[in-house]
Length: 300
Picture (cartoon, rainbow, N blue to C red):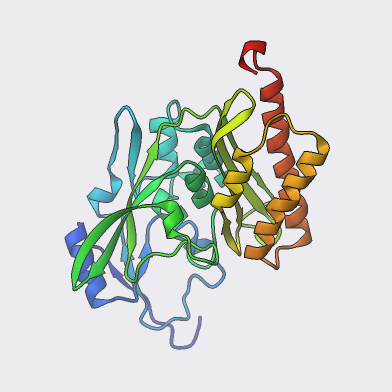
């Protein structure tokens, strides 16, 4: 055991009002949801930090709620990935379902929460990029003038300039809203292991509506675990300007333009991440090309 080890102080608020009271008294507390990421980190327990403060969110009933209507599904931050799969697998966007299926076995998805997958510190999971590609929004709770306030925000607005998800001071995500997408092009791919080999892994999420030879409202996000999410509306605009199918020279030009954005955001991605990013991008293009070529003649 470490010399002078002190057990953390665990706070268990039963509702959001109690949470606000605790976070006001202990503003540097760590939030504990499912714990799947925290407990997988080196030296997570026993902790070397003296008098650590942890707020356990599992007793807050509001964070476990799930509701849906004809347009979207809304998940409390403590809803697990397994619960998302069981409640919405037939109606939720395919890219989201494919992302959950790559997270791990049910041992993990039964504990990992949607709020936790977005809010990991010092590490970016594949989930924020997928939610960005799906135009998802999140309700962010934060303390202002000693009161708990809330605001709905696009996930893209939670990205800082370095590509990391950043919440307001003493902030937390309480709900996530995901629209039932009608986009006929949805793609998610993760290459490598985010947990076991984060330095060389990459994930990409892509959504769009293919209308004849054009993409309507395309969105693509690349995620590098130790760096963050690379997302740019300029990249989306490039995809919007293309006419499919693309030939090899057009694919090479597109790849070059995209890497200009990626490397301006993350200058030190590994060579293997670069190769894997290129491979994923070409798979996406191949899928769109195939969809274009298989459209009925009158729709081309």
